[in-house]
Amino acid sequence: MIFRDRADAGRRLADALAHLRDRPDLLVLALPRGGVPVAAEVARALGAPLDLCFAHKIGAPGNPEFAIGSVAESGPPYLEEQVIQSLRIPYAYLREEAAFQQENLARLALHYRGSRPPPVIGERWVILIDDGVATGFTARAALHSLRPRNPARLIFAAPVAAADTVRRLAIEADETAVLHCPEVFFAVGEFYDRFPQVTDEEVIALLKNSPPA
Image 1 (cartoon, rainbow, N blue to C red):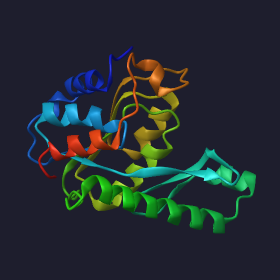
Image 2 (cartoon, rainbow, N blue to C red):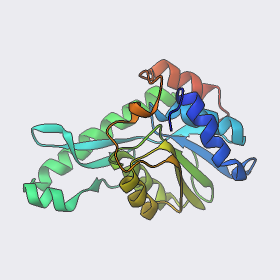
Image 3 (tube, rainbow, N blue to C red):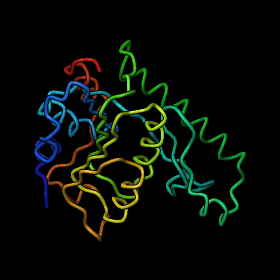
C-alpha cells in the first residue's frame, strides 16, 4: 500500500475511523511533526478538534540514534529495561537525558501552541496519530503519558506501521487502527510517493486552523 502524501494518508485513515465521526467527546492528537498533516485530515473528517502530543526517544550513550527508551511531554519515561541492563547503562544517565529531552519538549510545545492551553484529556475518546511507525518508541511514550490522564478510550492510529510494533502498541492502547502492517519494514518514507519534511510553519498553521481542544 502506497500513499500519495500525508494528506492522502490522512483521508484514508479517516475512512477507517468513520464510526467515530461527530462524537462530542472526541479529540485527535498528532505526534509532531510528521503526524500533524495526517491528523489534520482525520480531525477535519471526523469533526474533532486537533492538538499535539510530544514525545522523543532517549538515545544510548555515545550513540544517540540507538533508542533505549523515550520520554513524553509529561509523565515518566518509557524505558527498554532489558536493553539498558544488557548495555549496563547508568540510571543517572537515563535521568539526566530524560530531563533534558522533557525540557526540549516543553520549549517545543510552547513554540507550536503559543498561548493555546494543552488539551483536556480526561473522559474523552482520544486518537493518537503519526504518519508511520517503525520501532514505536515515541508512540509508546506518548501512550504512556496519556493513560494517567484518564481518557475514556485511547486509540492509536497510523497509515502504516511495522507489524511487530503494532502488536506491541495494541497492549498500550485500547484500540489500534493501522491501514498497512508490513512484516518487513525499513522506513516510513518508502510507503509514500511524496514524503517531504514537515516544517514548523506548517504545524503551527494546521493547529491554528483547528478549533481549540
